[in-house]
Image 1 (cartoon, rainbow, N blue to C red):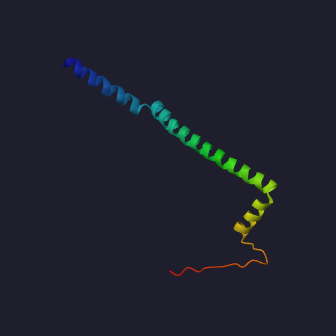
Image 2: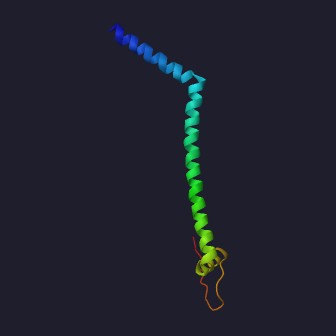
Image 3: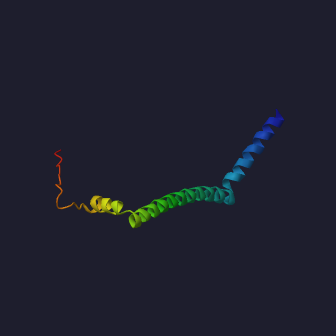
Length: 89
């Protein structure tokens, strides 16, 4: 019974030391910051790959350039008819 109480007291003391120690709190904070930065880096690399593909297609595929001009600038050929639908709430 005394050994069990001593173990609990030692366990609680160790937890308190780890919790209130500035170095451990900083270590945990830096761990979460590192994980956030890793995820930001993965997202930036993904965006970079998408932009590289887009640049490649813009330089090498004329149909892609035409599609991008049509979709982003709303340009249509003179022979085409543009339909616009209005939404009524």
